[in-house]
Length: 249
Length: 299
Ligand SMILES: Nc1ncnc2c1ncn2[C@@H]1O[C@H](COP(=O)(O)OP(=O)(O)O)[C@@H](O)[C@H]1O
Ligand SMILES: [Mg+2]
Image (cartoon, rainbow over all chains, first blue to last red):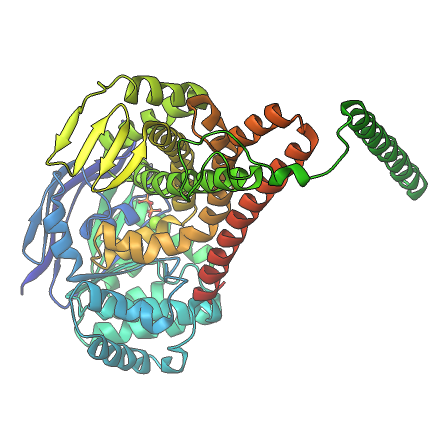
């Protein structure tokens, strides 16, 4: 099994003394889904944002799709990584001044230099896969949150990425809209997409993930298969966190 | 406030305004009577009998005052429009440098903005005129194959000449205004949510492509109003032309006032000249603004 993500001893501080990442190591193999959980402020976003260079780190090494980067944050390598890694954000971050289809074709045309027609055809295919091709000409503000997030997934897929990063993709959605996004993610996992997903959706993690990584205060507390993590977590901290999640439901 | 009090207050303000306008009209008529000139504009068509160093259209001292004023207005328009373009160009560069990722460039541009904004414009104009141009030798200072020629007479560039007065004003106004425009640009860029930067970066778009396609289109609605008010300031500031001896509308108007004693008529002409300039700027910007909003159907 070919590893897609290898992180070794990643360490990062935004402010002196406070570690957002503290010696984080992990591996994600091709076709696997890693779910990252942990309380707010534990460093989940910081971690997955280092994977596509949105965040720098102070110490450690990263190997993404065979491209190795370190704390020097080599822009050329980061750019190479970004062409092969897609990301979906909590707040969707669609471009409000571009139509849905333009949002999707922007990177294929301007980064991969594909022909406009070809990019549009593939964009329409991705939208129809998600059942939202009728919205192609609309603008993001005319769509519901769930639809916007699915467009964001299509936008990330348009570059035919080899790794997808999700940072709490359903946290900003109305409860009745969450499943339409999770279903798309399940579909992608079934097709063999390698994914790192920060989420608190236990059902999704149980069904789809291969490993659950639990973080607290920038440290990896444990990495376990979901059946073990959710029924018999190894660490006291993980069990406490899961108890609290249950109470909130 | 109760309605009674409101009505009383409005009534009071009305009476106050009436008295004020009355005093002004009274002073005006008394002054006009005292000068014994009466209020008319027929003198406009008498020969101006002064020379103008700079005239974009043909002009001799036997031309009328009206023509001289129009030449002055054109001179103002010339320096305002060219400063406006140069200031926008400079200001945009500095604004981007200020917001960009390069910390050295950011520091330099922050320093530039601070220094320029802390020094009076008049001083800066004097600097460019007396140090920048009159400081040069009168024989050719820099000469490149008779095409480009810089001396204390200004610049000659393949047949076109720019006087040192015009250039000092152009450079002074442009640099001064660019510092303010840089801040307007920076404010506009910062008004775009951080998520938009993250989104285009995560898609592999370069910083420059992301700026052009994603950030600037969203920043423009916030930039245009600030830009308009800087352009209006620039137009008003251009009257400092008189300090370096450039014949703009204000300087020519001043000369004519002294020569004819027609202070009130000249003042009214000046008022309308600037009204026209400002309307020109505001309306052009309004059109640009509407074009932008139209191209951004989402808002
Ligand atoms: N841009 C930033 N500047 C300073 N501190 C930050 C920044 N982003 C995150 N942090 C801090 O880093 C820690 C981890 O944050 P984050 O990765 O966002 O956690 P999570 O995604 O798990 O909620 C928190 O203490 C947070 O306050
Ligand atoms: Mg987060």
